Amino acid sequence: MTTTYAGAAPTLSPSRRYLRQLGIDTQYVLIGFPIGLMTVVVGLAGFGVGAGTVIIWVGLPILVATLMLCRGFAVVERARIGAVLNRKVPHPVYRSGRDQGGLRRMLVSLSDGQSWLDLLHAIFRFIPSTLAFSFTLTWWAGAIGGLTWPLYGWTLPSGPDNQDLPEILGLADTYLNRSMFYLALGVFFAGTLYWVVRGCALMEAYFAKGLLNGVHELREQVTAAEEARDLAQRQKAAAVSAEAVALRRLERDIHDGPQQRLVRLAMDLGRAEQQFADDPERARAIVAEALSQTRETLDELRALSRGIAPPILVDRGLRAALTALAGRCTVPVDLDAPPIDRLDPAVESTAYFVVAEALTNVAKHSHANEVQVSVQRIATGLIVTISDDGVGGASLAKGHGLAGLDDRVRAAGGVLSVDSPEGEGTRLTAALPI
Image (cartoon, rainbow, N blue to C red):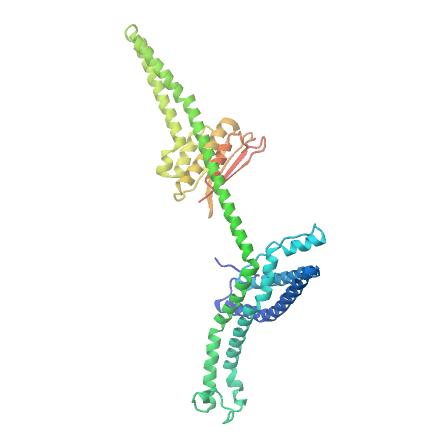
């Protein structure tokens, strides 16, 4: 992925990009040297005078003024290094005492750590600035002077009292040899110009970035790590909640369905056993009814097993499982699920249960005439949408039927949204990461 900064044209040829970056780095280094001279004078003088007179309170406003000036230089420097690093450098948040009195405001400024880092950068930036300026100026002078020497070298005197470098090295005192020598030097400096200037600019820019944004970036990293930890904790809590809801529902379904049928089956078989001797026909009728109860119990157990791990989902994938699910729904389903590659089992399972729970709620509560199911895979995840033309009024709030489904989606790292105005149907959308 190519990152551009400050309107840089992404379609520039490599040679033009090199020239453009060379110009940016050169002006950054050349302008940074006089700015560095100013900041070191301001920083040292202001800090020296302020620290020396702080005992008589005169130094406090001087120190605060020095920190403010260094903060201004830091703002300018952050804007400048963005073009060198090819990315925007954010500004850290400074402590503010605007709502407090004059003395407290000064104390707040003096207690801000980033302000002192700005001062430190203002004082010591002349070291990398001087080194970068020296190398950059030398390489530019060598490249321009060497490449253009044949144009002006003939005007320079050359004699016993004014020997130039080729003569000292034992070369023949001819204009052609001197031209070739200096031209070779010019080619060397020009060939290495981009890399030397780029290295000098990066050295100065990273020094500034470390002092002016290092603490801010560290805080952002800590904040991001804390947010990731909180998200993981929320997903874990959602997973536990979804599992608890699923277990309670399974327990209720077993208690209300198969368990009651099995109790009745046991009672019927007991009555049949007692009547075999006295009334065989009645006993055979009871056994036949018990067989019917057994089949119905098996059907209910199969239906419950689909809610745990539908075999068709494991064997044939999400599209086949949703097709079978739509075929069993009592409300006509318009399914839009194009063939997609197999996804992570957790994603497929979550998507399946979103559709299954939604269709169950549609059949029980919506009074809808039709429901539409859409599954779309995008670059970042899977979008599952279920919409109906029923009475609406669905909600993700606790105590409603969709709360457990929301926990299941959040446990998978996704987001579930419901749009269900009264009398206008329901639209349920789940976005799942892949």
